[in-house]
Length: 141
Image (cartoon, rainbow, N blue to C red; front, side, top):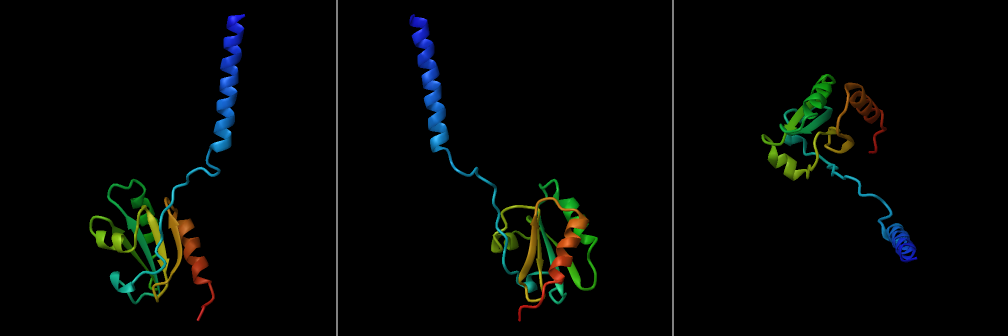
């Protein structure tokens, strides 16, 4: 009889703990966030007069940054400047633009307005689609 009461007490305790967990757990799991600048000062970069700038924010300790940079460099042409912004060499730019995750690829127009961005690993095809979709946006002026 005592063992039955103990077993019922354990089961009741487990049910109460499960109910409390479901009742008071956060509604949404914590998701990683990162910040993306809304504007780049074009004079901070090597080719400020290019029509478009694809800035790839990287770090030497980032394992995927080199692949993203290589994919981005494959898109460079007369109208699209591609520049790596590596943290150790350009730490001031990382701080100024509040870059807190790499790789972060940011596409800015000639005025420096950020038109699109992509965080994390990206292929040349994904970056090409990003650039193509931004280039097709109508002028807002």
